[in-house]
Image 1: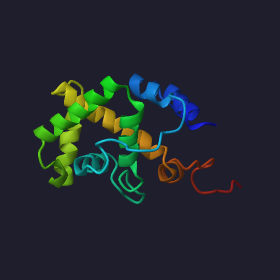
Image 2 (image 1 turned 90 degrees about the vertical axis):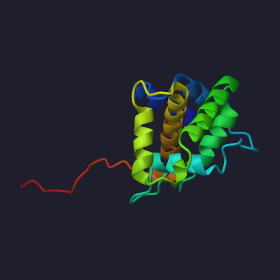
Image 3 (image 1 turned 180 degrees about the horizontal axis):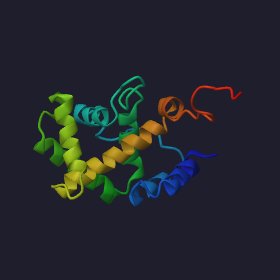
Image 4 (image 1 turned 180 degrees about the vertical axis):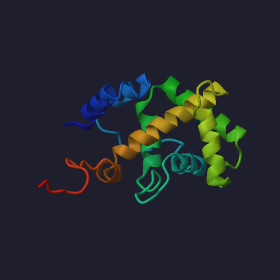
Length: 165
């Protein structure tokens, strides 16, 4: 099954967990073009946000599996111009509202992101950009090799075997 068809099916089964503009971007035909993936690549603030959303534990975190590169490529090459500009403007405002975010302790970063992901969070532009980044982080992680093989490992019969006598 093609990755796009798989993602569309997963979104359908999940009840539309991805935003419509993200789903439209996934459905664009063709692989990601080669080349520059935009101004997001290598941003320490973006790395900090992605790492806060899905940190490493007994499995690799989003940062280790390259989700930042996925997000940068997705934003620069898949989103419509208006969506891309809105997202980047929201991240710019985020950087202005939370200077030194990447240097804060994990608990403080988590609290900031939880507040921004809450229903009715202000400012709306920043909250929508963080929500988009959150969904792209989850999408990028679980479609990566590590996320799909380590986190989504299918166990047809969970638990230990117990013989019935």
